[in-house]
Image (cartoon, rainbow, N blue to C red; front, side):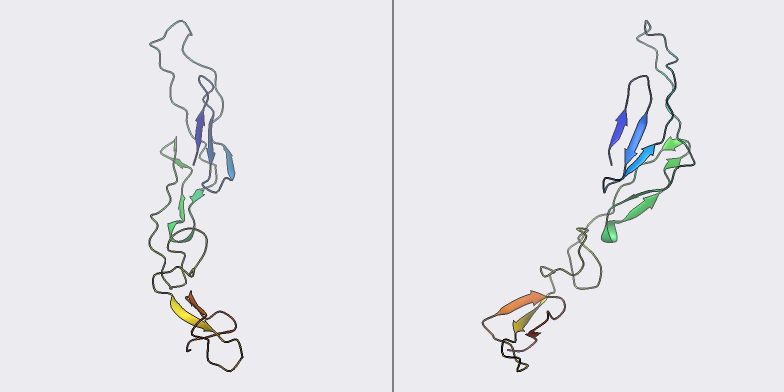
Length: 137
């Protein structure tokens, strides 16, 4: 998520982790401190409570949080990725499920002649049998 703040304009723009623009959550307001007073701190912006929830992350890392929490802009932090395993989930949060490099992927063998037995010289690791492959060589 990226956050942008313009000095004295107090425009807070939030973007979701996947790059979708969630729009401006804070309305512009004029500065309340005179420019001649360097010790003056303008009040913090308030969040528009009508904004949609924020979403970030993919797979098991996907999260959804309120855009505003207690009148302040909230931050969406994706969950923590794990090692990919063959379980029907995107454990490593890269947008793909049960990839061939999963730690428990099993060898499958190309059945080049269609006889039901694979070629022991042509193995391929996968969570599920690829088309044209057999579990035995």
